Structure formats: C-alpha cells, structure tokens
Amino acid sequence: MIQRQGSSPRRPRALVGLCFILVMLMAGCGSLEATVLHHATDAPAAEADAAQAKAAMPTDAPSATPIPPTATPIPPPTATATPPPTATPAPTETPVLSPIDRMVAVRNPEKGKVLFETFQENAGSGYSCSNCHLPTSEKTNIGPGLLNIKQRASTRIEGMTAAEYIYESIIDSMAYTVEGFEVDLMPQNWAEIYTDLEIFDIVAYLLTLEGESDINDSDSESADSEADSG
Ligand code: HEC
Figure 1 (cartoon, rainbow, N blue to C red):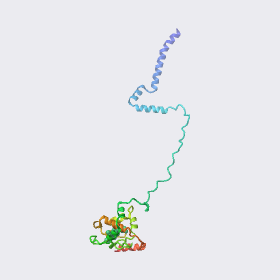
Figure 2 (cartoon, rainbow, N blue to C red; figure 1 turned 60 degrees about the vertical axis):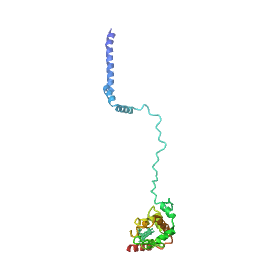
Figure 3 (tube, rainbow, N blue to C red; figure 1 turned 60 degrees about the horizontal axis):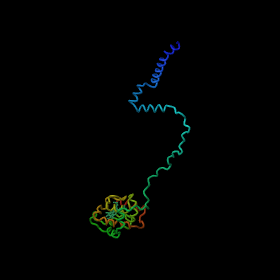
Figure 4 (tube, protein in one colour; figure 1 turned 90 degrees about the vertical axis):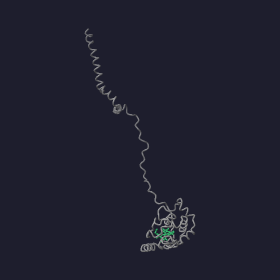
C-alpha cells in the first residue's frame, strides 16, 4: 500500500518533469517562434547561419593525409623586359614599292632631262629647273645642287623613298624645305605645267644624277650661308 500510494503520485510528476525538460530544451535551442519567423522571412540568412554553425563545428577527425604542396611553384616574372620599339628599319630592307616608286621605275630619264632643261614661262616668273638646280654639282645655284640627290632624298623624310620625296618636292615645293633655303623660292605650280607622267620622267632623271661629291662639309656650310645671305 505504501508503495502504491507512494508510486502513483510520482508518475504524473515524472511526466510533468519530462514536459518541463522538453520545453527547456526547446527554449535552449532558441525559441520555436523565433526559428519559424527566421525561416519564413530570411531564408538565405538562415542558410548562412547553418553554414556558420557548420564552420564552427569542429572537424570530426584530422585528415589523415595532409594537403601536398603544389608541385610546380609559380615561375618568377621573366627577367627580360619587353624590347624597346625597333628603330627605323634598316635602309637595306627593300620595302614594297609604292605607286610612285613603280611609276618612276618605268619612266624615261632622257625625256626627264629634256623637261628639266626646258624653259617654262608660266613657272613662277619664268624658269627651267636647270635655272636653279645644277645637275652635275652638289653646290647651290639658287636651289640646292641635285648631284647625288638620290642619296640625300632617301634620308630627308623618314618613311619616304627618294622617288617619293623628289616627286613631292616638285608638285608641292612648300611641303619640305631644305635647311638653309627659303621656302617659296621654287615655283609652286609645276603640277599645272607638267603632267604626272612628265614629273615621273623628271624624277627618274634626277635619280640618275650620281657621281663623286664636289662638296665637303665646310663647303656645304659656306653654300648654306651664301644662300642665307642672298
Ligand atoms: C626659282 C628657282 C627654282 C626652280 C625654277 C626650281 N627649283 Fe627646285 N628648289 C629650289 C629651292 C630654293 C629649293 C630648296 C628649298 C625648298 O626645298 O623648297 C628647291 C628644292 C628642290 C628639291 C629638293 C632638294 C633637296 O635637296 O631636298 C628638288 C628635288 C627640286 N627642287 C627639284 C626641282 C625640279 C625638278 C624643278 C623643275 C621642275 C625645280 N626644282 C625648279 C629652287 C628652284
């Protein structure tokens, strides 16, 4: 009897205790209400929470095999710097011929010589090329002497061949001015007097004017100063 009487009130007490423990557990894990709200309104945050929790959890066991170091180390930056931009191409290189070069190559230098010496009354106040340019000398006669003009012309303007430079000098005498000379001495209307083909003939002729230089550096200076003074 004593046992029964004693045991019967103990059971409900145990049930109440269990319920209490359950409630306490739920409260401990975070309130049910809060959890539900959390999931409903902020799913990504919940996921983040889970991830955080996972991260916080200690790894179950230290991995048996340590991560091996990468076999190939990253190579150091190459020692050689990028090469500087190449200078002007070597003059020995034969570039693809421009239309002017091709035309001049097939024109008639003898005809060009005749045109060079022909007086043109409409050229400026009336001139022939030869009035101002000596074909057999490098010395100045109003204009620069044209002996060996082929050599000089090829170095005058970077990227221009001798034929291109001479052609441009004739049709647009203002385009380039030889150092020591006045800009507007040479008649500027040769393109109206001679056709393109005739000018190509003249260029072809001028390219044949080669020979021993009759001028040295000091002569060149005096020639320039002569030109300057008058
Ligand atoms: C009235 C004088 C005069 C006449 C005529 C004249 N020139 Fe000139 N020429 C000059 C002078 C001065 C220069 C230098 C200044 C300059 O470049 O404009 C020159 C420059 C040149 C140059 C560049 C020479 C160099 O060393 O870079 C060429 C090529 C040339 N002339 C060709 C001709 C031809 C071809 C004719 C005829 C179609 C002609 N000239 C008629 C005076 C003349």
